[in-house]
Length: 610
Image (cartoon, rainbow, N blue to C red; front, side):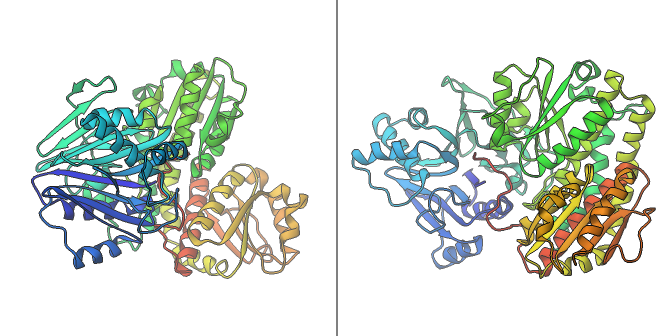
């Protein structure tokens, strides 16, 4: 959730901190700060609010002459947003920034207070700083101090640490929260993700659990969990600085919506063989592996759960494999029954989602095979899963996912077709049709919908003045309705819920009154008549109805207040067209209401704490 940036080298560190922090804004934050070594001093500048407030503070009191600094964007967990609770925190000879949660901080704080430590903030991070400082005073060795202190911590952390007496050095360690080391021409960096470093370097090393690194000017020394030093292997990201820019769009979210036709095709096309069939063997997910799967547990959080509901339908319909979907935060605490041929398929855009990672580790402890569908390369989930399928969506900066979700759905659909082909439940023509739908029909259909922004803006105006909005649908449309409702409420703050259309009469219809907006997803011809009956039920009670249906659907003039027609080239074309439509309706509603589209309140891009 929080963002970390650090630099040690030969250049001016403070401008690098400010640039890196600005690129970490997408993760969500409510306070910001930095600490810079200037001579033998460490200067702290931090505040509640956005980076603009920090910039004003630095204009009033510039921090100059530093080539070693750490910075942080904070999303409040322990302690309300305030100048005091903002990072970095300094205790004794230790200054640090932290991403994660120290679960046993109260017990640690109590022990430290008994030793005379007085805390100024309400944060678990200050407790971590105090504990590391106590260990540093005993040992005089930063690495030993970090090892001793973290041995007493329970929870997740990524630390960037400055020690007094260690001029020009930054120490970093991670467990459960993401952190990378990067190498530039003028020094070394640490950051929560590569996006923050694209203006400076494209060479990075993904730190392992428990790994400690010391950045010192032109060198970086890494220590494994045994305390042995090793030389990090740096990779070169294919991302470019331009990928993290808006490219002329008013918001990252709109840019990413428009990138979906390319993203969907780009996710699937590398997994198509010469015969036009889905083939994930290059990902380590070959026919022999898929043919042995007898059950699938799909585990995820947020929008990825909604992608999972569609994925479960694909696995059952195309591959004949029973599939169930579980919210990751619940999976470990009431784990479902599973056989030896149960595949645990976890989905995460960031590859660092804490609850999903915990569920993955639980599955591995139980000896179950694991497969990760993930976007961010070389992240913790990607590395720890037995097998992984990257979605190739590219960087997604807006907090509300669009192309991340889109590519997850595409990957799951293609995987299900590959599984059906491998176990004989689907023939080649069926699998080939799925591929064509995803690589050709769906991108074309999405482009068709993106040319209709005026339609979505008009629909959005009909939602903006209402306290409650409902999405309804049946089958796959219900799964999509859940994602549509989440998109609307998370960026526009309009309360929106999704219901299986057939459930309306079991209670929910009591909430329908004259003018209540109800958006009806009816893209499946086999279920259209049933869904239309539900539409009539809400229409007769005065609901304001927006119907999204196929171009060939027989709809009378009085059926809905507004009808949005969707291409029907293939099932994939219709589904992905509907996906774009509901995303655009949510976006236009948020814009109409003047909301911060890319950074909705109280939300973070990467949820790295449980």
